[in-house]
Image (cartoon, rainbow, N blue to C red; front, top):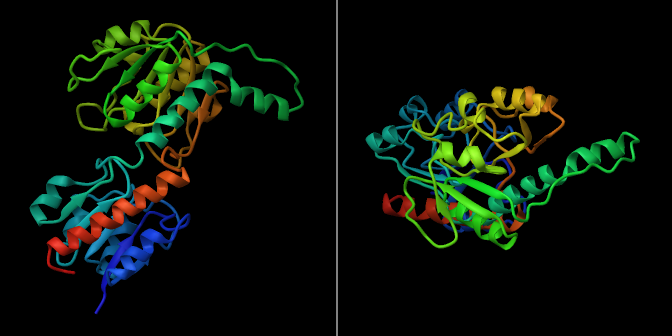
Length: 311
């Protein structure tokens, strides 16, 4: 008898069937996300109750204590296809005996490269020029070079470190704010306010926790030097989106590249800002990265179910 598992990431196996085939070879009965998008709390709770899976390959849906409690009789393993676990109530999972895994290595390169793409797009005004040309305007927009700029990296884990490596090749001065990182060659460890006051570019790479929520608040955005660029490819709750939109419209902030939002799909004031480059949470949406993430998530799920004696 095959074990049912639920896969809520809407594109699982779309680029390469290997991760799905690995689940099938392990004797698992796969149930896919029927909505083709990020699920609401009610939707994921309903699917968990209806399908009664022993394992879940999860996306970014809210796996709250209430959701996990409702599935306590059958759900034994959660395998996040991605880095962060801020959408999972880990205390509830531990209390209920649910194993929780993530794939921290797989998306690092893809997210880092998107951060660099957003920085370059903002500095060289690529998206603005594209929109103007399509509107019939042939006008060269003067931007700025990345080479020689001072870049503040807020968070210096796997992704932040990869971004730093790429920026060094541009000849950038790197300021790092991360309370868990010790001094190393090529970077300067600084306080948050000190970094904001001198950086030409601020790129956010911190996890979303109660301590980091609102990391770039209205007050801290006001400390940025005029014309600075803000990039966020981490989590939406780290940046005050309304305050950032106001700063962009006034010119206090020179540009922003935002891939993640407090509420997704996003429909807020940043859409009105010509100097904002907005992408739909696609940091890991590179075919090589997706395959690595999905393969790692499938392995984690299988290993977890074996550890529970269910395979």
